[in-house]
Amino acid sequence: QGPKRIAIDGPAGSGKSTVGEQLARQLGYLYCDTGAMYRAVAWLALREGADLHDGPTLGRLAQQADIVISRPQVADGRQYTVTVRHRDITWDIRNVAVTRAVSIVSSHPEVRSVLIAQQRAMAQQISVVMVGRDIGAVVLPDAELKIYLTASLQERARRRYAEMKERMGEHNPALSTLTDVTSDIQRRDEIDRDNMRPARDAIVVETDNRSISQVLDIVCQYVEEKK
Ligand code: C5P
Image 1 (cartoon, rainbow, N blue to C red):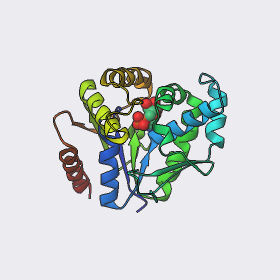
Image 2 (cartoon, rainbow, N blue to C red):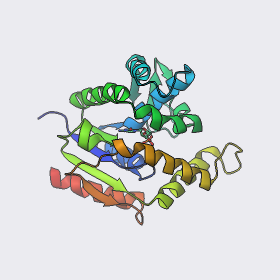
Image 3 (cartoon, protein in one colour):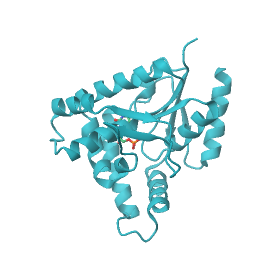
């Protein structure tokens, strides 16, 4: 028996990161947030002033980024640590500039093929809960369990906004408004649509009127059934 793989996909704000991280912790699996890898490439592209529409250049950048996702060693609320060329960019990749650039960067096949290969290699070495947009359909089509989380745009924006407020403080001038967060997510949904692929054999879990722990309970039941 090789490593076990659980794929959780869904749009921004569907709860996949929170649920994925808690599930991984319960199972003792590695938590791999593939969105963080796309964000790391976007961060590097912005830093190096690369053309966000130049697929081949961004693909090379992804290849040379040396992205590492590891268990957190710092207790500052992070779910994991992301480094690019040994530099810790865990919080930098959450900023508005990266969030606005990431969908364009991740739309290039040159970038996707590099990161998908790295994601598959990771899942070959160790049991993982891998979270993203295309994990069940493309990255790990043989995953033992595939979950697809959904929620309405309004609910997803509300969650993202609450998360940012919590992290940045309600009176932080850099805090976006709920309207801005909603349109950012909507814009991202549109660009991401092509790479947003629920696997045909994924279990769809609607999260609109459910708390994180309710969603986690549902997912855990499916994990139990697969044992
Ligand atoms: O999940 P998160 O919002 O951090 O993902 C950031 C972006 O990375 C998404 O909007 C999408 O463009 C891209 N992404 C992707 N494929 C994945 C994970 C993320 O294209 N598997």
